[in-house]
Amino acid sequence: MGNMLVTGGAGFIGSNFTFYWLEHHPDDKIICLDKLTYAGNLSTLRLVMDKPNFKFVKGDICDRGRVFDLFQAERPEVVVNFAAETHVDRSIDGPNVFLQTNLIGTATLLDACREFGVERYHQVSTDEVYGDLPLDRPDLLFTESTPLHTSSPYSASKAGADLIVQAYHKTFGVPVTISRCSNNYGPYQFPEKLIPLMVLNALQDKPLPVYGEGVNVRDWLYVEDHCRAIDLILQRGRPGEVYNVGGHNERRNADVVKLICKELGKPEDLITYVTDRKGHDRRYAIDPEKIHSELGWLPETKFETGMKQTVQWYVENREWWKDIISGEYQQYYKTMYNNLVGA
Ligand code: NAD
Ligand code: TYD
Image 1 (cartoon, rainbow, N blue to C red):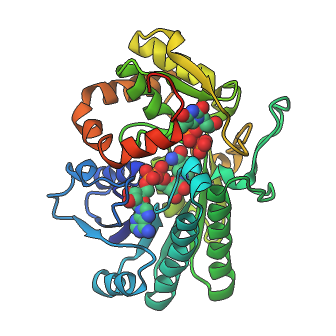
Image 2 (cartoon, rainbow, N blue to C red):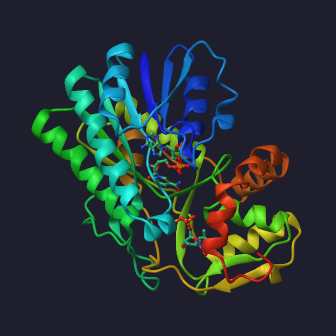
C-alpha cells in the first residue's frame, strides 16, 4: 500500500493495528498522527518507534493546517482513522470534545483526502451507531442496513462521522470504506473500559463496579481479529461500503467480570453493583454475514483464549498501566465512582 496514515495509533486499537500492519506488510510505511490525549500513550508504541518504516507525529486531526501539511509532506495513499474520543461515560459527562474530534476531525481528514487524493480512506466506526437491541430477542442482530439510532453523545458523534464519510463518497467521490465493529478487548486498552478496569481493580483487590444489575450484553471481539478485518477491507472491500465486524460472542457484563475473577483467582464478592449508566444500551449484537461472505473474514480467537491472554498481558505489563493510572486517571476515577466503598 506504500504510505499509510494511521490516526489515533497511540490508542488501543490503533496501536494494535500498527503492530499488526508492520508485521504483515513490512514493506509499507506507517505515519501515525495522534494528539496524545489521556487515552493515547507513546509508551504503547515503543516496540515500533525505532523502525525506519514508522514515524510518529503528535497532532490533532481537527488542526487543518497540521493535517494538510502532513498530507503534503507524506502523501499517504491510504488513511485509516482510529482517532476519536471513545468512552461513553466521558461523553455523558462532557459531549463537546466528542463532537469536535469525532465530527470536525473526520471532516478535516476527508478534506485533506479530497485535496491530495488517496486510494482509500477507511473510517473505524462502531456497532453503537445502531443503538441497542432488546435483551429478550436473541434473534435480532445489527446488519449494515439497520437504521442508525444512537443513544449516547459518543455514539451520536460516531454516527454523524459515518454520515460525513458517506457524503464525501457520494458528493466528492472520495474512495471510502467504513467498518462497524463490536466491543474489542486485548492488550493496551485504557483502563477506563470494562475489561481492563476490572482486571486492574481485581489485581489490586478493589471493588469491581458493575453498572445496574450487570445484565447488559456486549458482543466481544479480540482486537487482532478486528485488525485483520480492516486489512481485508482495505485490500478487497468495495469503496462506498459499510462492513459490520463481530464474532457472535455475546456476554452479559456480570459474566465477563466473573470470568476475570476466575482467571485471577479473586473472589466474586469483589463485584459491587453500582448506579446504572444514563441511557445504558441494553444489548449489542453484530451480524457479520457480509464481511464473511464477501471477504472471507471470520474471527480466529475464542473468547476464553483471548481473555486468558489479555488478563495475562495486564499481569505482565504492570509498568505500562502503573504509569497510566496515575494523575488524570485518579481524578476521573474519583469523579466517576465517588461513592464506591474501598475504591
Ligand atoms: P482509544 O480511546 O484507546 O484511542 C483513541 C486514540 O485517538 C488515542 O491515542 C488518542 O490520543 C487519539 N486521539 C483522540 N483525539 C484525537 C485528536 N483530536 N487528534 C488526534 N488523535 C486523537 O480508542 P480505541 O478503543 O482504540 O478506538 C479506536 C477507534 O475504534 C475509535 O474510532 C472507536 O470509535 C472505534 N471503535 C472502538 C471499539 C472498542 O471496543 N474500543 C469498538 C468499535 C469501534
Ligand atoms: P465500556 O467498556 O465502557 O464499553 P461500551 O459502553 O462502549 O460498550 O462498557 C462495556 C459495558 O460494561 C457497558 O455495558 C457498561 C459496563 N460497565 C460497567 O458495568 N462498569 C464499568 O465500570 C464500566 C466502565 C462499564
